[in-house]
Amino acid sequence: MRGVSAALWLGLAGAFIQVVALGTDFYVWEGRRQSAWFGVPHTSELILLSALLTAGLTALTIADRSPVSGTKVGLIIGIVGLLSTFQLAYRMVAPPFAGSVPQHAAIIGNSCLYYCLPSQAAAVDLLMGIWIALVGCVMVSAGGLIYGLVRADQHARVRPWRAQVQPEMNPWLGLAALGAVGQFVFGYTFFTFYRTLREGGTTTWSGWLPSPHTSSLVLAVSVVVVGLVWGTARERSPLGPAILGAVITILGIVSTARITYRILQSPFGSQAVEIGPAAYLAAISAALIVIAGCVQMSALSSRTGVQ
Image 1 (cartoon, rainbow, N blue to C red):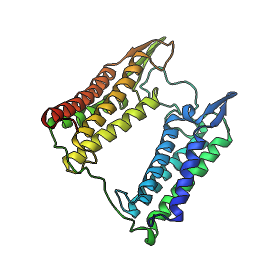
Image 2 (image 1 turned 60 degrees about the vertical axis):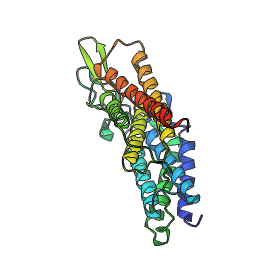
Image 3 (image 1 turned 45 degrees about the vertical axis):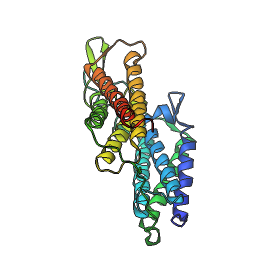
């Protein structure tokens, strides 16, 4: 508890406010209330990430199990909090409602679903929920930066979590990392996941914009899997060999199920849709994570028994 100051408690209170705000409505647009979660999905997920990082790092600091120093804890919390603050402030002056997507262009054009000038955005009414979220983001940013920059808070105990028995790096773990990168790159960058068919032309989409919650989930799985493999390669894995394989398998199953769902059930409703080849490559990449995790577990069990 000695590494915890009033600044960190301020950030934790802000994280609680962030989570509460995500359950509220942010806008009234064309007479309809738009919730935080579905109205600005990528913004709301950034706010959720900020809250989770703040709560997680604060809990580890309180338990004297933080994997990074007090300075880095504060800077991580503060910087992610600032990103969520700036993104939310932008969405207050430029809401993501700006008419239809261009019919004959890849989805990177002049829609406010990505970014646009405030003058190009639709007029909306801001509700109390978005102001509550902004207060929470500012509290997290201030608490984290103060905690990271004040000299007295720079010496919080650092006790990285490392498994006593380190898993050996092997080609299967490399395959898991490759699958983790592939599932995101193929599905949620510039490759074609969907083609929507309209009169006179076709619009191409990556998976990032039309399925935002799936894309954020896949990105999170990719980051965690690559992080676990990287830690194993450096002999600093937080998980033992058997648990590592199990966690990778579960994460791969989550990604595979969600990507497959979005292939079978597009987010465009009754509109005519073609599934692009990148969607299947993303699903195959996610399946590679599952296979690699299963082999990691089975190979270990055959040598040492259940752990």
